[in-house]
Image (cartoon, rainbow, N blue to C red; front, side):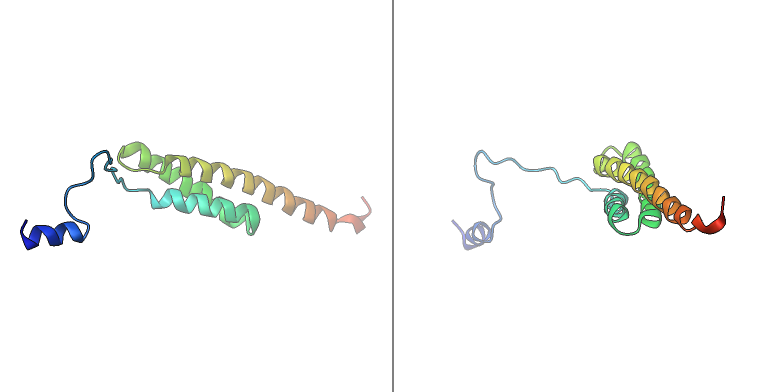
Length: 108
C-alpha cells in the first residue's frame, strides 16, 4: 500500500465500510426555518408582528418547496404557517381584550 493511499484512509477518506449507507444531503429552505422560528416566537413573545411574518415566510416556503422537489422543509413551512395563524389570532384576541377592558368608564 502506498503512503498516499494509507494517508487517505487514515484521514477519513477512502472506501466506506461495508453495510453503511451514504446519505443524500438535500438543501433545506431557509424561509421554512424562519417561518417555524417566527411562529414559535410569535406564540411566546411578540404575537402580532412575528406571527404575521411567520405566515408570510411559511407561504413563501411552501411555494418554494412545491416548485423545487429537491428542496426540503415543507413540514417546517406548514408548522410555521399554522403557528403563525394561531399566534396572530391569539394576539388579536389579547389586544381586543386589553382595549375592551380600558373602556369600562364610558357608561355604556
